[in-house]
Image (cartoon, rainbow, N blue to C red):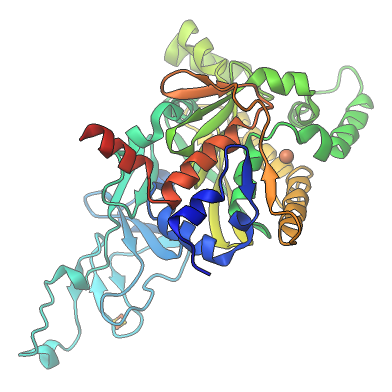
Length: 443
Ligand code: FES
Ligand SMILES: [Fe+2]
């Protein structure tokens, strides 16, 4: 079924959402075109392609793309499609090449996507074929840019600059990198790739949903606490004991962390405090940070504790943990979630080990926490597929958002995060995009 702009706008009320947002394949296709096509999408981290010729591949919405570093060490994000008869050129997830060569008829491409060679040119003579015509290149995406090593691309030539699009939420990305004594992070430890049988938005809505952990994760928190109680007083510090129990924190604790929402759908919970705030600090790490930044700046960096931050719609980061989760929608009820872990350059190895442990304990498909959430998403997806009640609600603390100019702030158990996401969803989907608003204001 196709929808008019008015019908789509009617699916998002101030405190209600229509179930078809999560279940209708036609809505999903429009989301790929208007949200994934209109905003900035996370592609990868520069450290994944350290040398000229290194590449990774992925799907940007329905578009296969390759991120590659050229011989001048510039990074490009290219449509992974041959300019001849359209074959997908690169088939591996990552690798190294001196140039790209299509498997079908052997057209070759430089690392910036420019067509470099066509076999047996003779038959093209006098046909009007001009191999220098850029239409035969591997096409560059309309925009790509990086912030602190995180590469984003956009199919929207009129998208705002990346930094402007990130807005106040960029401070969390800064904090993730500033936790390195060298101010830089790099991907380490591989990827956890996990298929979720649910709509992509259910994962995003869960990020700052602090009304669920004490319910959904109770069994694992209780089991962890029971185990911790058996440890002798003088037993060595167990990172597991710091990571799992905070997921059972009370409503009051989560309320106190707060939620902050931004234009374009970004938001985070925490800031002054979060469920990661009480982790112990490796003395070697503290020494390295003090040497790099001095006492005041080190305290500032390490006490900025957010939990989950969303750069709507594709990237979520945990700055205090140094891992990210990336959203790759496949279909209306199928989504790939990737967890990537980061090494803080200049920090002791214990930091990376804790990040990897966290990723395994909380985010992996064999973890004890992530599958709790996945079960809930799956049940929501099942429930929303049924007719008889078309609406879901998001009233918590409605009407009480505090407007601080570039951001809205509310309590940690509020639905501010959902309202922030769906303001952006509605704007992108009705072509009343935040970008268009901005232009209208400027003109
Ligand atoms: S399809 Fe790529 S060379 Fe023919
Ligand atoms: Fe959860």
